[in-house]
Image 1 (cartoon, helix red, strand yellow):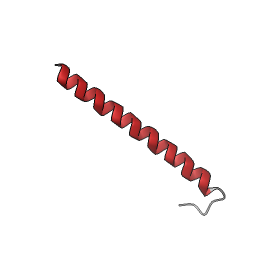
Image 2 (cartoon, one colour):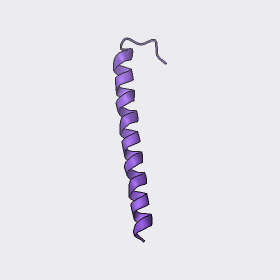
Image 3 (cartoon, one colour):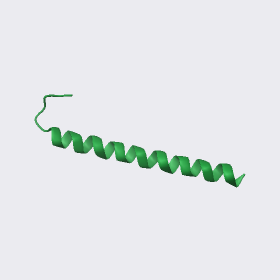
Image 4 (cartoon, one colour):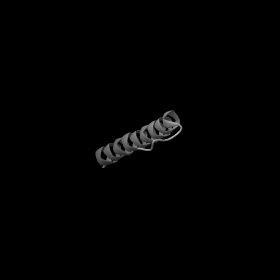
Length: 39
């Protein structure tokens, strides 16, 4: 990590990014399951 000036802001940005990534993954998996069951 950096010895930086604003670790809180960095943590917030990283947290938001991880949250977005997790939501995208969950939506993708749900869509995949729906597609596989629909066939």
